Length: 503
Image 1 (cartoon, one colour):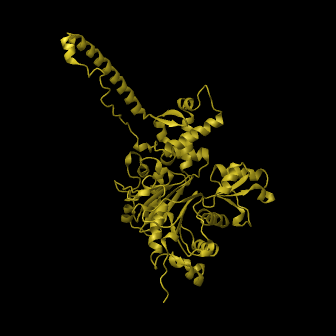
Image 2 (cartoon, helix red, strand yellow):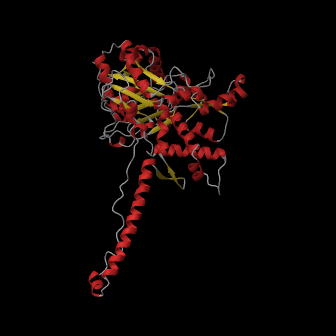
Image 3 (cartoon, helix red, strand yellow):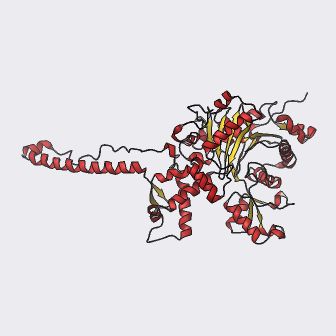
């Protein structure tokens, strides 16, 4: 009888693969840690190594396009993983101003180029985490943005067993890991990435067929939108670029872009539906400096009348000051003004900052992106429209989800990604005025987040929800001899086709 397979928890590797970033770590802990490795999911190729037919203006155009958008240049053929620059090598080459063609193999949620994917995971395992390929001691759990074909899953198994020599391998859909992190097994996951937003329906720990859509609007569009608003604010520009020390136009734009990023990452931006007048607590004012005077001595000296008159004048002046201060505070509250310290300057900004989320929520803004930015008219939509479309499509999906279940899915709406640093992100899930966006949506939806008892994830838990969920699933999977993983022994006996048995 073959003894059951057992893995030490300190050897288990979790790799959460997103469209633009990969998060990873080695070892499972009682208090689940944040990812120890964050790697941009990009590879680079020097212009000098491109085929001669690509060298010239065409290659340079691709370089500039790749650096500024999600558009992918066509990868060259016949390269090995070692031919690409990854991680620090790529960062340094770009910082040195070298002509580099950049590729994002997971930008569309799938694997656009297998050699580039291998280069990224190889660097992650053996350079970042510093594993030893010869030991064959580390099992790997991989999460991926979208469901893949059976052939792709088999190719993944072949890659990790034959090229990386892993001890065991398991792969899960990223939205399932995200909903697990919120202590739920079904719901709708809204994952806002840099250039796209994925909306996925999950039921009973599985990604539902037909219940996933992607809209090509993401964090980068929101940042650009807010930057453009700030560039038309003369008061703000005068603060960032004073007359006595003005910035060049390109430097001013770069400064405003940094200011935009600073505001939302520090939690000063909210979705529009959550903003309102905030009335400041004015307190009781300053104490009277003469309140400690010796009243007995004043009375003895016969000066009490003069004291009363003086105090009346002071109280009148204080009341006038308090009234003026209240008016100023009310005005600031109505304008939702805040003063922040940014790069050595005190900058005041108003409620316009809350318009950052408009590309995700406002249909008029989406139409503008279609007309001016070339967004796909068929797939560009607001989050509310995307939620409605994703849940309504379940009716025609192969899953055969009954209407009662489609309604139940709305009981757990989760927002993930970097945009969760914007306050109250759960309000993305409802329409304007808080009305349901679908006939299947109940009057009240339950918005789920990563629980507070995950101490290391209290500040940015929803941003790393997929990695947290993958750690939870890895602990359950690899500690169970009958868990949903493929061992090296089974792969050696059955080959890549064995992957089909665990899907």
